[in-house]
Image (cartoon, rainbow, N blue to C red; front, side, top):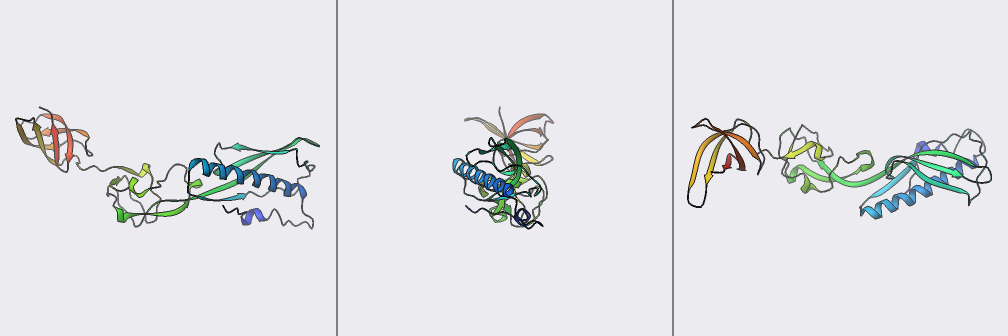
Length: 236
C-alpha cells in the first residue's frame, strides 16, 4: 500500500523557521504509523481490493509541548469509527509531562466502482454498454456507490445523470415495465379456464409487482401482478 503525505501536509516539514519542530515530527510519525496500521487492518478485514493514501492536515509549528518518551506515546482513532474519509486521531503522552492533541487527516480509499459511460436520461434502463468500472476515492462517497456493474444493469434511472458519474442505489429503481395509463392485457384463470380482458394500468409497476388495473369492459378496478410489458395477471 502506498502512503502519501500531500503537498499541503508537506508544509509541516518546511516552515519559515530554520529549525524543524521535533514535536511536529513526533506527531507526524505517531499519527501516520497508527493510521497505516488501522487502514491496512480495515482493508484486510473487509476483504476489499483497494489502495489507500493518507494525508495529514497542517500542524501548527508554534506547538511547544515537551517531547514524549517513545514508550509513553499512544494513538487512538477519535472519529469516525472506520478509518476512511475525514478522520481525527487522538495522540496522548503519559510521560514525562502528560499532554493530549488531536490530529486531523484524510484517508482516501481507492476502489473500482460503477460509473456511467455516457449521459443517461431519467427512466432510462441501464444496459451493459452504459456502465464500466473506474477507480474512485470511496472515502468521499459514503455508501453511495456500487462495486459490480450487474447491480445496475436492468435497473431504471430516477433522474438524469452525466457521463462518468458514480452510480448508486439512490439513483436507481427496478425497471417499471408497466406505467400508469398503459393499455394492458389482464389474464386470469386456472388449469381448466383461461380468460383475457383489456385493461388500463392505474399505476406504474415493476416485474412481479401488484398494481391497480381497471378492466376497460366492466370498469371495475382490481389488483393484478405485472408479468411482462403490457401483461398483468389477476386471480379468479
